[in-house]
Image (cartoon, rainbow, N blue to C red; front, side, top):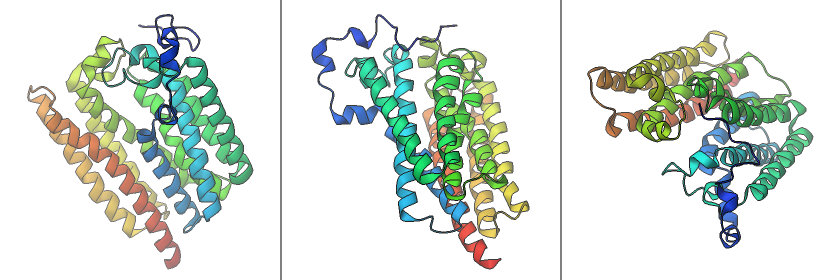
Length: 319
């Protein structure tokens, strides 16, 4: 298995780019380092969790602080992910033009930028949110950069299952910023995202498995093939739906959320089942089958969290 690239090594990589190329970086290039498209859903789960925790409006100042700090922390993780993966990013068509892999931003400058984002984020959350929120944010950063990117990604097909825990921390950050602690429902939110992540990511991995194979990344469809992957997707979809309705039985949410979770979950399983049947019948993975599941999985999580927030506000007034 390919060894994980050291942050300060990679002799054939971007740091050998012409100085002129390194000097053309703009604020947009530094923004691209933070992976804004990826962060949007992470921020959504953070903010909606704040409304769930407050059972209403969490306060404008706290909302702004957590949103800005949350973006900076997740963005910092994205920066270090691009630094570590710059060797393989250069070999993959969809990532070859990233600022670090293309040489537009040097490893040194990217590292300074990423470190500054993380430090400022941690201080903001500690001072204006809560110490627990700051620690949860830092835990998400460490899980993504150290556990997933540097350790698991290049060494095991379990990478996205275990490493996907990094994306589960944002709702804990939002919850802890409001309450200063974490209750059972907050951990349910963590668990829902944990089991949702393989469904979402493996739908994408199926479509780009050849790229992963070429650069030696052992994603599940590369190591064990499409059939096992779609079976695992279906299994994790079931886990996700079951977990999503369990908070109802603890009276953390009510009927609004329960009906929404069931409706959203049924369609998630339908799309997973369609992909499963398509592959098990001996067909190659096609974008028209995999893309709907990949895109809907994002909508699923976004709507599930917003309906939980709506329900907790309404349900609170019924109690």
